[in-house]
Length: 445
Image (cartoon, rainbow, N blue to C red):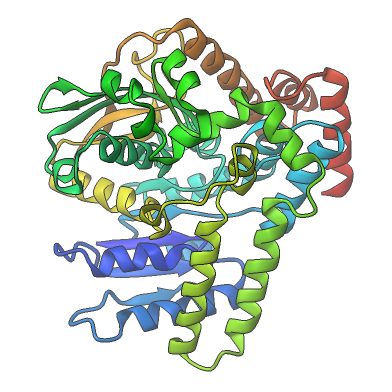
C-alpha cells in the first residue's frame, strides 16, 4: 500500500513515519514525500533515514519532484500542507491583532485568512487526486481542517476525511483523570459522545463498559485540575457547561483573557515557530549526517510541544504541560488507525471530520462536522449523537456559516463572501474591522 505525504518537508512528518515503523501490520509498502520546498524535504528525509536505522524492515521512502508524480498510484494521501509557510501564519496572526481582535492560526479572523489562502491549493490537489488516483483516500491534516476538508469534499465526496488530534487527546486525558489507564482505552471498553466542528467541539459523555463517568469527573475539582482542559477552563465553568470543551474553545469562552495575553506579545506563536523551525532547517542542512539531524529534530520537537498554547496557559495561571502530552504525535496515531480501519473493514470508532448527513439535523447534509464515526472499507460514517444544547448548536451554526462563506469566497474570488466570513465570526466584533482586516491582508499577500 503506497502512502503519499503532501507537505513532506513538514516538521511533524517524522512522527508519521515513526508510527509506520512501529506498525506490526506493516501495512504501508512505500512512503512518497512531496513538498514545494526541496531543502526542507531533504532534511526531513534525513530524519527518516535515522529513524529507520536498525529496523528489520523499514518502510522505503521516496521523494517525488512533482505533485502528479507523488499522486500517481497512491492508495492513501496525507495532505499536510502550509500555504504561505510560517510567514503567512505570522500575517494571519498579526493583522487581526493590529485591529484588536484575536489572531490565531485556525480560530477567528486568522483562521479565515488562512482558509482563504489555502482552499484554492487544496482544491487543486483534490482535482489532481480525482484524475490520477481516483481510488485513493485523502486524509486531510491541513488547517483549518474542517474548512479545507469541506472544500475538498466538493471534488472528492466522502473519499476525503479530516483528522485532528485534539478530540482524541481530550478523551484520553479525561479517561485518565477518571481513573482509567491506557489499557482500558485501547481495549475499546471506553465509550464517548463528542460532536462539533474542528477546533470547536464538546465531550458530552464518557463511559466505561457502559457506565457513565463524566458527571462524577465534573464534580471532582481535584480530578479536573489534573489535566489540561480542566486547568484551562476551570472547574466552575466546566460544571456549569456540563461537558468538557475542546481546548480551542478557550478562545471563545475566555476571549478577553486570551486577547489580553496576546495583544502586547512580543512574539506570536507563528513568529516563534518561524524562528524555531527556520533555525532547525538551517542548522540541520549543515549538521553532518542523519544522527545529528535527528538529535536536533528531537530537541526542537520537545520545545515545540512544551510551548503549545502557551498564551492560553499564561491567561490561566502559566502552568506547564503534562509529560504525557509532550511525547508528540496524535495525528499520526489517528491517521494510522483510520488507514487500518479502511483496509481491514474493521468498524473502528474514531473522531473525524466528515460530511454531516443527519447527525446534526440543523446543518446541511454536506457540511463537515467533527464527531464519532464508524470506519469500514466504505469510509467513515458519522454515528447518531444526542441533541446539542442551544448554546452548543448556536455556536456551531454561526461558525459553520463562517466556514461555508470562506469556501465560497476562496473558490469564486468573492469579496462579499470573504467579508461575510470575517464579519460573522463570533471573535470579530465589527464589520468595519472585518473590512480593514480583509483590505490589509490583500495588500500584504
